[in-house]
Length: 389
Ligand code: TGC
Image (tube, rainbow, N blue to C red; front, side, top):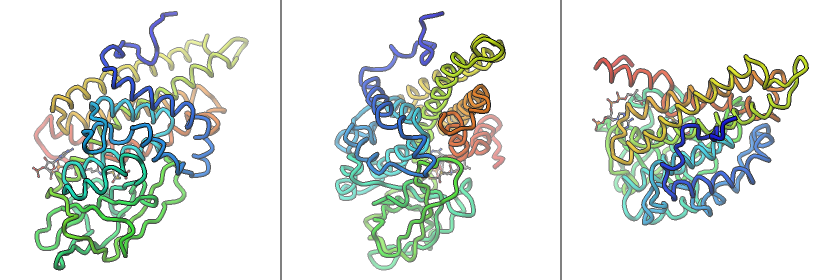
């Protein structure tokens, strides 16, 4: 057997900086000790571990790519991606918490909020003492946020927010919500930092999910919530929320591979031990074909993610480039998880094994932050110049 590491088949390791490796390894050690022994049970019970935000904050793993003065580590975008991947090795729902906190809450505060808001919120969000959520999608659908119905009406020195948002990760446990609304009068999309203890702010869980069960998926009701005008973010139009989604999608392009690698590792262990027709499954040609496909998917996805990271650090992460990586790396992870589930046979449907959990989680990962279809059409528009949404 070759001595080449199967989790780094094309030798990317020397291309990462010492800091990128340090942050990734910190997350890997945390996931091995604190997540893997419990996640099957948490997922079954629809339980999000309440200590997770502070634990990750103490390790300096929230908002890592933001400058140090803004609560981050001043680390590279690649470091952020690797942190997402290491956490998603544990569970996509837990990685969703980190994506929302880092890319959808800390990032817009860093990019678009007043200094006062930044000073108030970025430090506790970085330590995990505060949790944030992002309220963009509405019950009528998520793919066309330009048709959102939530409104923001200016009344003196305040805005009054009204309407209903859905699929906000962390909503029920959040202290701060980044809420996107249409401003009455201008009809522009605008964003607000909204304290969730504000009168009229209500969050509810979304029970009955067969996916991301360890994540706090929520609905958000805005019953005439009054927000100081200073809490309005300094960005207008869809560019605001889409720039945040772009940052989160980047993390998912890395993150989904973590779920894939977890399934690959599980399948390799299983086929080495499980016997069929008098020998281990690892001897079987079809099993080896499945493993070869998994290795190829993960290796290609890792190369894509690595290069996207370096493009982002050079300021060349166009939305279409991010769309390609988000779409194709999630597809890769889905194929890997499905193959792993299959190789585990009947046992593969048990949640004591990770593959079925990852497979079901990835159904959401393929849908949120831009569906597979939306990213396909972003690429179609890039190729043809025609908008086919
Ligand atoms: P268009 O009207 O042409 O452009 C609007 C403005 O946005 C800019 N832009 C982007 N900026 C940054 N990143 C991107 N990916 C961007 N895409 C577009 C664009 O340059 C323009 O700027 P400006 O300054 O010229 O006004 O809009 P479009 O035609 O490009 O977009 C259409 C479409 C369908 C691609 C877009 O609406 C889209 O991406 N839709 C999917 C939205 C989505 O991902 N929704 C699900 C979010 S996940 C969720 O809600 C749960 S929240 C997370 C959680 O809590 O788990």
